[in-house]
Length: 245
Ligand code: PXP
Image (tube, rainbow, N blue to C red):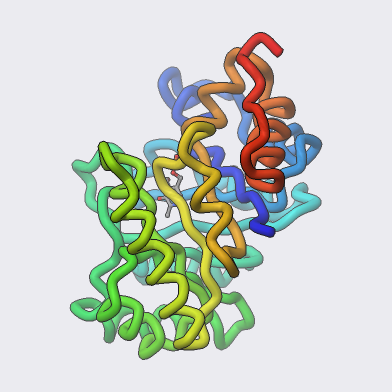
């Protein structure tokens, strides 16, 4: 059964809109854990547009669950990760102009850089996941990088008007990754409406979900929003409670 990693970047987005101290992702992380979060994911971007270094440092000390640090494979970020020691690092591509992480890593193209980052982090016992599209050549390159995990990019599935073909790609990608000895997570663009088929993929370990949960939390509170998502992942085909439930 897939576990649930909650991405709290958009809590920090609201705070940074005013450069103030609220809402505090560190406090909200505790509520997400009360709702059943199995881990907390934060993306420390080079431009610090949402999460700040202070958030990552404090979360590492206060979380009862696991900290998954999303970051680019730069020297600065690898040094930060080695200092903070999250439970896991997920390497993602990063472009300053993008609204959110738009595509998976080009692992084939970036192999030397990624391999070096993986080596430095895993050499210090921090497991590394690579965020990639579910494509055979990318997955093979992931294995060549030495990473132990992949996070399959579910954005194309989430955006598709008829998602069957994209779901089949995610299923095939999961099978191939397993055959290559890689553990499989997935995320990006998943919602209360589209999550169940992805959660049901055999061997899917963890889903990382942010925006839809933070959005629902405005109406029902974060603890309830997390609880409702976890119920959908763990008991597929159950009824999604209305916002007012
Ligand atoms: N996984 C990765 C690698 C991401 O970059 C993001 C977005 O920050 C997510 C998961 C969560 O995506 P969403 O906010 O659309 O649920």
